[in-house]
Length: 583
Image (cartoon, rainbow, N blue to C red; front, side):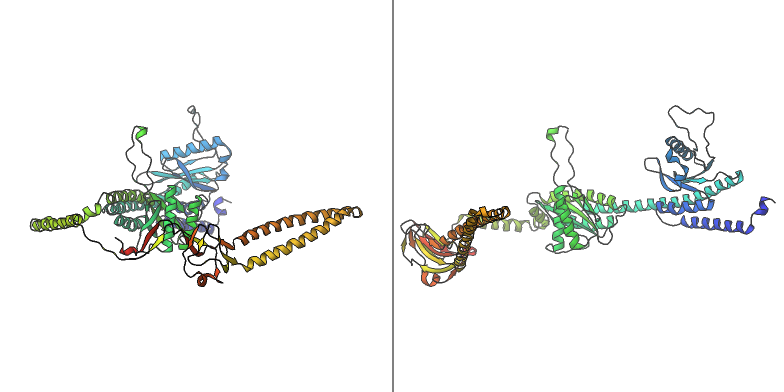
């Protein structure tokens, strides 16, 4: 019976149908707008399945011109990682296929024959037990990668040619996808350059810091493609939020704006950019605390704070003339409110916006800080006063104003003020209560002569009396208990060792307690002395109606009870004049 008779025609037709379905899927996949990484992840399994192969790999050329593994299926079955020499041979084979640029087959364990290898170089070879089928990924401009298939070696030459032809067709479909992706990439870059050109032109259009900040916030948000952009300007050591994208006016005293300014101040103090996507472990403590406070209030998922630096001046050849880098002038704040994932181009676009914003904001702030700039700007807007028709009037009015100023500056004017006042001794002091209490006894009256440290008022504090009584009772009880245990220790001959140790410990404890009570007693005694208020100086009591103001009334510590003055010393006139009437 022949081999052809052993093959079921329906099985052959079913296999062909499966291959056609896979090819159709690959053709449809090549027309989608997915990322290359996602395309390779769906493309290679279908190719391997259509060829009934063991596995495969996608190798792409990175920006440095080297081949990098992009996607693989069962590459471990090749056992290349077990032998460094085999890895080198396989790597040289990949670069040879890329350089030749055509589909090719390499049988198992194949390599150069009698050709002697160049010294120090590993010849290209297939060190595996698989038939390697290579297809090249191309665009109109360059070769961008290689498709490698690991196929079983027990197939005939015609079948191998079919494999090679099929892989070439699949590489053409992949090439169509890469061409479309490349065109989209070029189109996106063209749009980006147009947006960047518009941003650069508008951000440098104004020399007013506030207008520049609003332009940076609104145009920067469109360029970065984020949810919100804010601009903070440094004032001293703190940053103030100057502009928020999409808002012409905002409450600068709101909690969210205040916390955002606090975060910008913390980041600007460090001088390093901060990107928060949910993890704060690598942040300085002051920045971490500020980030957490703002995130808790605003519920932002992603936030970046980028310090804005002045453009660096040309570097001096002499190290002594080189100046220290200036502190940041502000910060650019980028926020994603709903999504914590960063788009691949977000960081790059934010950095571009930061660089242009730094230069524009620095120029506007430097222009704003010029001497009398608001005056010059106002004069520049009123150039009509210097035109020929209005010049005589301008000169006349200016001369009249100047003459009026000279008259007001030279001619003396009478200035009269009325105020109530009193004649007061210069040497006087207030008498304060040193402790809370109730005035129990008043020993002086208005006009009474007093000497230094003479008692003036006696206070009564019921809480202090209760505390003293309680402490005294505890001292007496503790003393009696201590004497009792000391007597017991004298009769220790009739006691056991455990009882003697217990009594000794109790005696030590009571002595310590008694010492503590004695210290408390001394403190309360000192407080009791403060109940007697004495005069701080010699002189005369000048406070009126002391009896009605103080007797039997509660007073607090630090409250002024009366005033004592020396009437024999110098006196001064004190006038009571509201501040708004002075000058």
